[in-house]
Length: 299
Image (cartoon, rainbow, N blue to C red; front, side, top):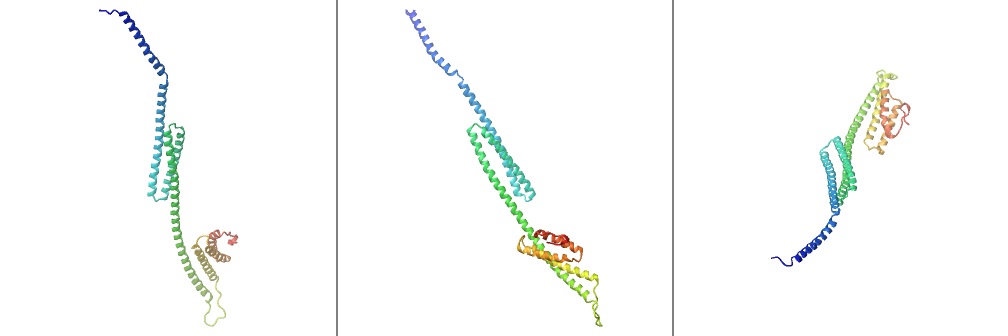
């Protein structure tokens, strides 16, 4: 059975459908105009670009840090070798290696500073600045260690130099004692030669005059006298070497030795003796600041 108000119901249905479509069209149109702009796409692109930049800066920092870590490990290995090495030549080579590694670290830190200026992520800049500050502190500490190591090396060289001076002093004392024995021997030989030359003609019968010594005896006596004087002057020189350099006692003994050598040079017995004296006087003149004149004479 059909309703009697069917046309009215159909009219009301169309009115409701039209009103429903209008009500639904309003939010759809608003949503379209609201979300149809490019803000979301731009935001996604910006976030993707920032993420790529973050990954790039992180990879760059990791590469720099790995390089610095490798240099630090090499320096530690060289330090361990230097602690176990006693040869000074090998230690100098190892020290040069450490200096090269230190220069490489300085170059990498300079590159890291340049990268820090270009970084746009605040956290990455903070990490890089902290690393730079720590490495600057490390480099200053390392320089202090190198200076202390050089001081220790110089102290060791000074100790070895003191031992060498002590050995040279002992040898100089031995030479001085041998020179004294030589003086005693030469004096005895001179006395014996004088006895042979002066008393050879005196027999019985009371000769009125002693026999005149020969020229060879005179030359031998003069040579022995010069040798005795040379040995005494050389003893003074050896005694001077026992004192410290530039000391007053050393200078006085060298002056006395120089004066004794000059007296022999006034009339040397042989040319060989003259050359020996001049060679011995050369270092004495240098230490005393004197310059020789011609013919071996001194100012």
